[in-house]
Length: 383
Ligand code: V47
Ligand code: SF4
Image (cartoon, rainbow, N blue to C red):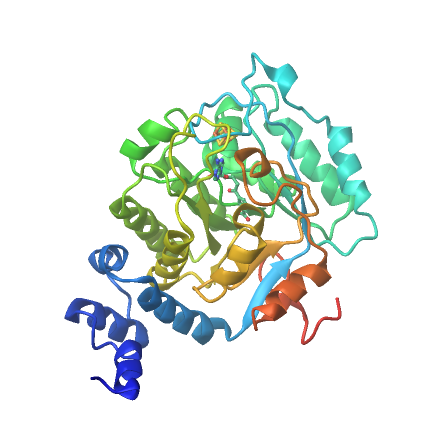
């Protein structure tokens, strides 16, 4: 019988993995980029232990135990939307707009004023695509926020919202983005990317901006000096090859501009939407995806787990599978996921709770601003 020592050695060494997987491990160790084919192989052949160990190696090489979060709140101007994404539990059609909400400029400024004197550093503005909320309306909102509280970083509008409002204003993407930037927009969130491949978009979000358009808007933002985030909605009808293609297009753009702050995988949630017949991915699949993203996206500094969607415990687990950022305190100001059946029905954590969660996972909480400048390192809970 095998001795216990050699059994443990065998488990922990690469011996029982095939040579292709061993080559990938060696490449990651040597800090070489893995190819699309190798990324695909990780999805198809590698187990969670394998990708998790590699991803954690990369995570710790880049960040040690540091785990970032920020203090932010969301403004969701409306959930009325002209588009018909099958996975969306949040939007209401214009015809049924009485079932949704539409905030006025003053109502949105009331939300901003509620945080006067609070140590938040970012406002995240995102919502549906309302046919009557136009570019000038959002420029006014940005200017009002900037005048009221210049230090609050204004991150807003998915490429889907931007594409619509800029086209409606009959401007080029570059001119529209410049106008928004001059009004006060500083960064873009990563929403609307879903899966870039058109055959998947035809099934899940046929009528909004396509993958090329999404990438063009982010590239334009980068060229205008703004930073942006990137997302990928996974766990629905896409294949592993679609995921790799999506991440590869992001990696190529990041090579060109360096403008992405982070990558955020978004797990498809199936409550109350037109794709409710699909089963949600398992936690093992989720952790594998986070790990492979960490390994594949060698030019992305940060991988973020959005805890309101995953739930606190799974978010905590992701910290051992490549993730080094947990988004923010959020203060119960978003409905996008609560309406889709996420674990967190009232997503809000105090800084102390977020730090406790990170410490409990044996990691080091660091408050950051939107651009990942460090604000405070919480050596021990003292929030
Ligand atoms: O594009 C919508 C996703 C996104 C569902 O940049 C769903 O910091 C899962 O992008 N199940 C919008 N996901 C939100 C978003 C985001 C969130 C947090 C932080 C940042 C950031 C960006 O939400 C959409 C879509 O991919 N989504 N419905 C659903 N049922
Ligand atoms: Fe509209 Fe966004 Fe929902 Fe699609 S995901 S229907 S664009 S709110």
